[in-house]
Amino acid sequence: MRPGPGTSTPRCCPSASGCPAPSSCTEKAGDAAGARDQYAALLPIRERVLGAEHPDTLTDRGNLAHWTGEAGDAAAARDQYAALLPVRERVSGAEHPDTLTTRNNLAYWTEQAGGDAGHLN
Image (cartoon, rainbow, N blue to C red; front, side, top):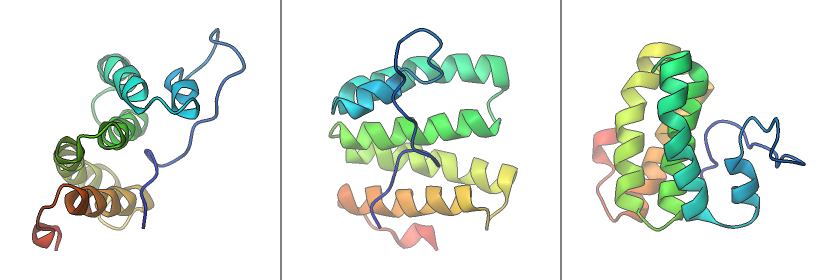
């Protein structure tokens, strides 16, 4: 199954003012590296304001991992999902839909990076 960014797909905002996720407009324009950079800039702010384990922060971590992979760095995407998975399991539970999405995305990017997915069991 092809992964999607995070757990929901953001919509492009009609204007930059008041846009909760400006990277969503970059995503729609097809600029994976730009989206990755936007999420990388957003993540420390989310961590500071909401906390490192807030669901929205975890979604942004997933989005960063996704767009890192889409920008051409499958190994880094795999590593980011591998770091995210135990946090998702602890915060949301092993069978929560967001945790399962993270597990799916980890398997996908592991395959894309040419690695062994045996550690996912």
